[in-house]
Image (cartoon, rainbow, N blue to C red; front, side, top):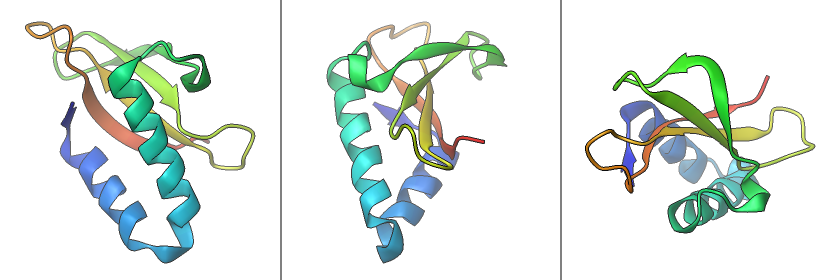
Length: 95
């Protein structure tokens, strides 16, 4: 799993902020599931329409949290030359 700078920055922020400990745990759990099985039903993985990754391919989204205000989502893609690898583009709060 490769992390883009935006994703690393948000992950670091979550890890350093004691008030976000529960959210950090949820994101870490989702990242673990994503690495093992991107189609895990708890991730609710789906393709994002209208967004493309730096490689020009589709961007996918996985849920780290659900049914919570500003729930965290993980945006990722599959690099064309290494289709089994996941590139985490960003870790964001859902609007």
